[in-house]
Length: 95
Ligand SMILES: O=C(O)C(=O)C[C@]1(C(=O)O)C=C[C@@H](O)C=C1
Image (cartoon, rainbow, N blue to C red; front, side, top):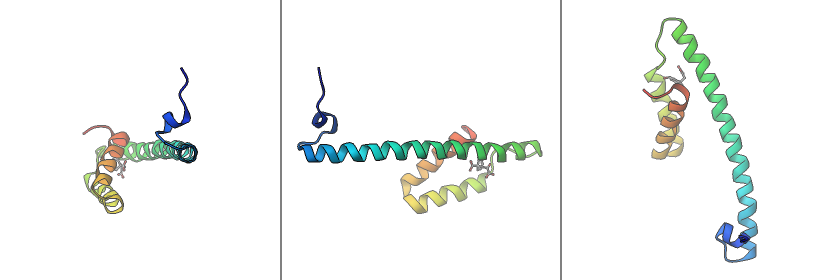
């Protein structure tokens, strides 16, 4: 059975289906870039954590995490805080 473009997009006109298909391609490309940036952030964060642990310190630096949470909250509101918490978990693991 074949799925029509209209069914895939939920649009009720061909024009809307075309617009949605094009915009979804842009979203997929943006998501690929976001994932790449997150992976880059994880690598940089790992360098910092290793340096701190090797020097005798702890993996986690809570005052810095508060700064980051505030940065995301100021830019994106409450969901920004949740996003920053997820990013921090990806970068330093669960605490
Ligand atoms: O900035 C640091 O000191 C880091 O270790 C990086 C980072 C982060 O990923 O942003 C990770 C763990 C720390 O608890 C705080 C922040």
